Image (cartoon, rainbow, N blue to C red; front, top):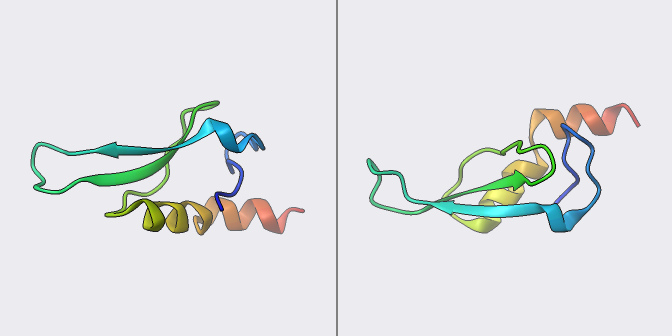
Amino acid sequence: MIKPCPFCENMDKKSLRIHLYVPEWEARSQYCVICQACLASGPVAISEEEAIKKWNNTLYQRLAMSEI
């Protein structure tokens, strides 16, 4: 489950996308979560699941949740 965007606080999970890309200098695909509302992107990972896990566990997510 993807948490809301910690930057714009967008609650619409449909606007959070898993982005796949292959950098020219890498031999494998990489993934990150991108908020379509504010274009914030999360940490890069080697799988979709890992990208979601990293997005949900960013410092910004923890700070946003501590303000609630």
